[in-house]
Amino acid sequence: MSKIIVMDSHDELMSVPDVAKRIGTEPNFVRALLDTGLLPCIHFGRYRRVRKFALNEFLKRYEGHDLTAIVTEMKAAAK
Image (cartoon, rainbow, N blue to C red; front, side, top):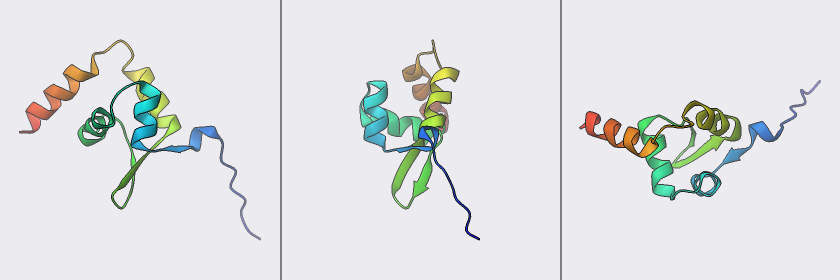
């Protein structure tokens, strides 16, 4: 008996340009969010995908925050 997996829109995988378009930023800023670990992603070789659910949770968590400042601080701390 095979198992049937039903995906809904929460399971949708979004590319970096898709995420950038959705949040109104450049793909490089999305990559910075991924590089710092603020926004979780799934790796497929060199490709990174963000679950729609994870993006929505990320947006809830950081609503009202200046993410540019947070990313800049995290990059500086990593050096």
